[in-house]
Image (cartoon, rainbow, N blue to C red; front, side):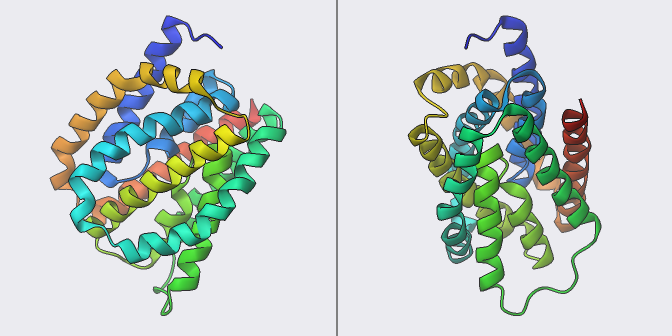
Length: 245
C-alpha cells in the first residue's frame, strides 16, 4: 500500500508529538500514535508502522535510561506478555478493521477509566499482579501496538519512583515491541514494506525525541501521574470517536 505525501506529513506530525511525550515519561508513544494513525490508515497498516517506529525511539531512550532500569520488574512483565502477544496478534490477523478499531477504543478507554478511579494502596505481593499486567499488555500490543495502559496503571498503583518507573517502561517496551513485530511478521500481518514505510516517520520521531529530552528534568512524581492521566483520557476520547465513526 502506497502512502501519499500529505499522509506522510500528517503521520510525521503525529509521531513528533507522541515521541516528545514518550521521551518525557517513557511511555505514551503507541498510546497516542495508534489511535491517531488509525484515523487515516487501516489498523493492519497503522499497528506495524507504529510498532516499528517505536523501536527506533525506544533504542534511543534505552541508551539514556538503562542504568536506572529495574530488570526484575521488567522480567515479571515479560513473563506475562510474551505468550499473550500471540493472542493479540492472531486477533489482528483475523478480525476486520472495524473490529480492531473497536478493540483499540475500548482498550484505551478502559485504561483511562482505571486511572480516573485512582488505584488504592500498593499490592503487598506485587509479583502475580505484575505478571497479570504483563498478560494484558501482551494482548494489547499484539492487537493494537498499545502495550502501555496495563503496566502504567500497575506502576502507578505501586507508587514507584518516577525515574525508575520511566526507565523500566522503556526497557520493557523495547523488548515487547520487538517481539510483537516478529509475531505479526510470522502471522503475515507485517513485512518488509511496513519497515520501509516506517522510515518515513523518522523526521517527526527524531524531532519529538529531542524536544522531549530537553524538558524531561522538569517531570517529578506528581507531574508524571498527571501526564499519565491526561494521556489516557485524551487518547480514550479519540478512540471513542474512531469507534463511533
